Image (cartoon, rainbow, N blue to C red):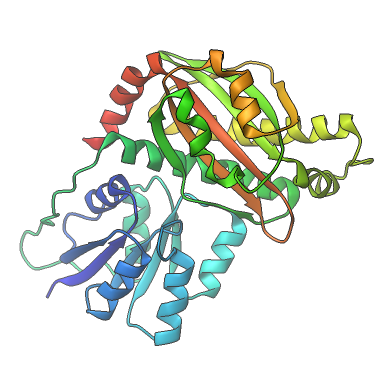
Length: 331
């Protein structure tokens, strides 16, 4: 009898990758869910005896799914599959009853090892090969999943350096004109002023700039976490921005390069603006950007008044190479 397996992830690419890396000989019936709420309904309907669960999802995230499974005592063995590789994320999901944790992007060996370790892998008599449903993946979805994994790498490094837990959003990815750029910065709307750091990057056929938008209210808390004296000093603010940028931008680009099998060179960071509005920041630098692929990630630190936006702007000329590289993930 086939085992009902649920793959719960808001990314079509992640669902496709997960399904195709399950052991071919495993006798399963696969159901997909686009978010946690759909996942819970599938589990209640008996379609998730084994669940592969993402953490960062709309409507209901993975933590809320685990809490609901515990509260309702639902019959599901949950393996978390996430780009958020922070130690505290591992601890939280284990405390909420998750069986184990697999880091994105998934590998067939990692999945097979976990299934065998917990005695979940059952093989049907005779030849068996999963009949996985076809999943349509567009390039924007693929790009968002790449950003999701890279975001987790950067958060993990920041968390280790500061001994904190970094709260992660769902990355916002769009191809847009500069006139639309301000509209994508949803997380900055409630803040009056920001300070910004800019760092260029270039690889084979791909180039762009990374912007770190640091909310002015975050400087003092971040300086204290870093052990810096005189958190209100202007030089300290610049040091905070540069140190944070080195961590987040470097780790994010490294996460992208690992997935797309390409290397980036980075220029020296430059302070783009201080204590200004996002509108002023974009307006004063609009001639630098035209049509662009923008990845926006809003990082927050649990228990602290710290929030910053990492924005990667790829040049329009980079889009064909990115499409080509992402195409390998879609095959």
